[in-house]
Image (cartoon, rainbow, N blue to C red):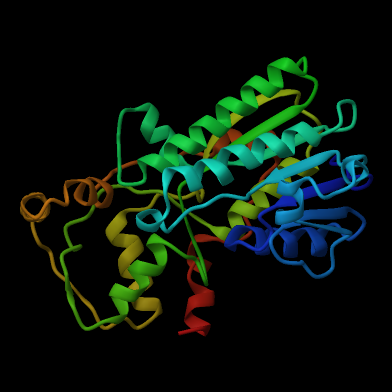
Length: 309
């Protein structure tokens, strides 16, 4: 039986794409839970707000953290890698996490959910993409959590989630760029991209977070790659997306090897590797442990885009 009461959840990064959906889920599904945030901007309908700037400058009362027994750490710099320095990534993705962990009260904190990235799993396999600096800071954040967990005698549960590419209405980054390409009357050489690829809908990802918060305590540190619970190919994903939004692009069955040669010639080898990367994530064990039943099914995954096209 899942617990329903007595939780005070601190959410960092509540105004981001994932954070906004998580706050909606928490308020709707658990109106009896207290929700506190650390954010650059206020969030409507939560129990407590601490500004990011005041927190970083130490302008807050320690008592703000006294009743926090669950932390969901979403805050991160992402998606704008060409304009973000490694120092900026470190400040938000590592230093901010360090300061948040230092405020948690031992004997009170029970669970920490840390939103990492599947790029860390790729980095561990020596697959280096153009997002390597981001992946390194996320990996260092994970190591920081491991150290904190060990130094606090393993008395709580830490769940590190490494999601595949997150998509949904309003998703930034690669999904936003893909949508833009599919809407234009352009030839796109994706027809031969028949390799497996995992993705995760934002509502399925936030439901995974809620499932962790709801579940009985599993003391320990757990790392999970996570994705939608169905098999997908890159071209299948793209074709369904194009059909849903009535995209004007034309998908050409261009040989993948020739596509790669072309990108290498113009110095875009990392882009080729990123676009043609084949992987499948199986989340069955996570689903069993946390009773996770993703709310968005295969045939529903682009419905919101249909109504917003």
